[in-house]
Image (cartoon, rainbow, N blue to C red):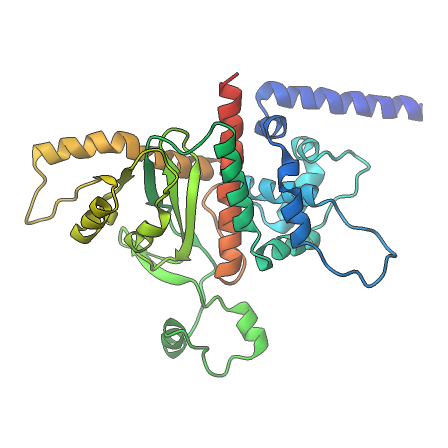
Length: 344
């Protein structure tokens, strides 16, 4: 009787996976198209530590832990929620290659592995590695690029005194903060206003190629940094076209002259004012440019639709940047899978 119940459990598990596939499991697409071994050397280097003894378990495979971070980035889960979802969801277990008897990494293990990647500055290298893979396998950046910044990536608001905030803005450490308080305070995040509302956190600045809608360049800053301040850093010299699209926040006479001197063709939205309304010709130009420029909004829309607005729980721009870079890499992995399957 016990054997029959066990057999029924396996059949039930298989039946549920088939129903998941029928409904459409996006994680299956990732496993079918991504060669995860591509990332192994960098991941192992990031976690390479001297062991005091050869006794004890060797730890989890780096690719398992990396795929867990990709899941976290796709679905915007905390470490604790991620541990639970891996235990609870059939599709997550299958994506990770785990079965009912597998040992599951706990929230602390997930946190430590992500910290290893951030502290060794490997996340940006993983992104660059995959970007090179894309170029080598028929997905080179083509037909121009679109530059934009996402909505503010929010972090827990810091309750500081006015004097402390002034010192932080000057790049100083507020007086009287002990080590414990320093660990709890995010002195890198900043306030900004958007559409009349105040936000506290960071910005995800990206450059996207027009043909494939893949993220090619990333810059993470405090929320106070104006989009135009990192425009030059985001321009992708490897794109086959010199055309550049952006919204009106990037438009200035200085920027237009700079683009012209460096050989770029600008397609930047125009903005009217109370004293100078846009002409019909300028309005039509904006509509024409927006047909291309809106593709970057699709990317932010995909990220938000799947994972919701990103809320960071870590402290400091290094951790914030690591999570934002991972989210952008996760998008590219997913987008690549879509492009490959579309080719048949």
